[in-house]
Length: 115
Image (tube, rainbow, N blue to C red; front, side, top):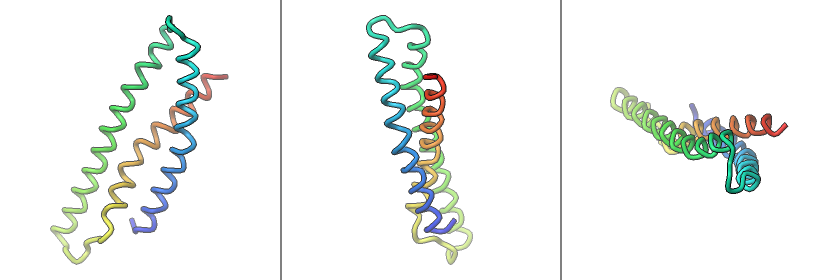
């Protein structure tokens, strides 16, 4: 993937995050406020999911960035002349993908649940 494709991927991911994250936070904060001191079982599951999904997204992101760095290192090892100078955008693009997927999926799920 070229550097400009990585830049577009990063721009798409950050734009999607900029839209999804406030929506998810707003929905969950309202849910916490409405639940008060006695949340329902459904509320407790959602509140547990808030923390668990962040840990899972971090792990997926870290693994994706590690694998991309490893792939680029292997490419350099086998063919030093094919080395890409802009490895940062490639690694960042891979790392943002799992976070974007989870945030946009949460926004869609919470939007459906609110209906």
